[in-house]
Amino acid sequence: MKSTLARNVQQAPVPSAKKRSPCRGICHIIGGPYSRMCGGCLRSLEEIENWSRYSDEERANILRLLPLRVEQT
Image 1 (tube, rainbow, N blue to C red):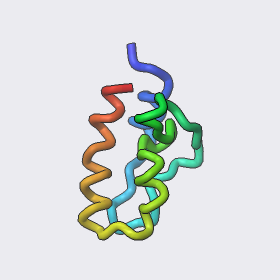
Image 2 (cartoon, rainbow, N blue to C red):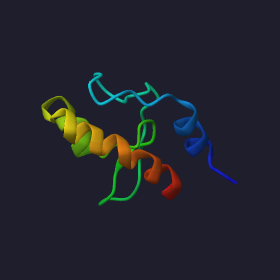
Image 3 (cartoon, rainbow, N blue to C red):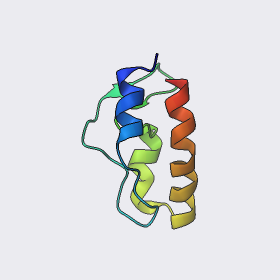
């Protein structure tokens, strides 16, 4: 059975890489000391911090990884 987090992330639309941010407004930090990420958008803290500096290609690569992260939660 999928966790509530996995269901919430899968149900929310993922924006294109050219849009501002995949933030879904349900931010909370999950994970251990070496793998902390936002439970709302599943980006790492580093990805959140650097999102505005990433190229469209870098953002697209991160967005492609998000479904894999849902499976790991």
